[in-house]
Length: 423
Image 1 (spheres, rainbow, N blue to C red):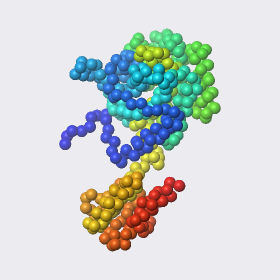
Image 2: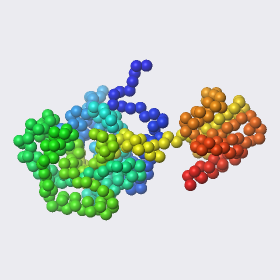
Image 3: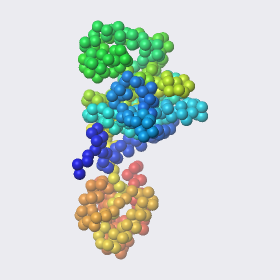
Image 4: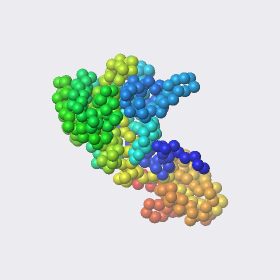
């Protein structure tokens, strides 16, 4: 067959899915611990939602979105990120009226037509949280502390937090004016895209990844651009993070690639990934709810790039990366043993014990190889002689040890062994 997956997409095979599920399960548990509840929004939205929220002049909207006109002559886009969709759902479903302050989390695929490379796909997955309805600095701190603790729980090491404050709208305008003044006579040092951004959205220049542009803006200082209130808020956040043992670096040039950010912005990088080293990012977007037609509300969130987290965890071979397979595989010899084994299989599954059996009429030796391949914890070896005595051999596939067990109390024995291994 010459039909292959589209460039920039990937097949996640069963041997790999275990790690994905582990990350998703741990994340769900953590979000619940902090009071966040799941929300699920459509993969397709009106294109104007992202043009208004992410920014008409951003690379995402201008170059990367998958947009099309549907049969109803509507301009539709596959979502390139989730925050705008969550805010749209918050407004449309009147969550501000029914619930007031909300803490939400999401998991799912996003789509951007970017040049595929390590850690970057055209269909990619994000896990994120959004808290809408508060401007509290302590909420800012909770978001960062939650992300920091979650990364630790997942087993991620060697990452670093970079934080910055863009201040209020007046402060952002002030920063833009400083950049315009300082870059006016340095345009030749900027890439073609950044030369265009000078007129359309100058803050985007700070987010450019080209070495020449980074070198040019690194010589520009925007220190002192924040108003007193925004400066005090940022200093207060730093004190809270330090008291909670969160290590961070202040990066004045950090702006992120989305127009809706105001105030706090942050990014988590893992140098082991190379050039594409950002594994999570977020910040405040206090104006987005009102920009999309709702009442003005403070809001903050973050998103984790799931593929990049998986890449990090796979490289350091954490225990979470192990595909554990079924608890028990039943290997049989003879037709009568197979019939009995299949009945035992049904009983085990009713009791919640993950189990499987051979469906290809293989030899005992081949069945044992298959059990090892699928990483079964134990193998129950059942033959005609064992049936007569209502006993069978139970082999531990981890250490190779074997014990004899009665078929009538097999469930109890397996639960005992499982409890012992979890102790």
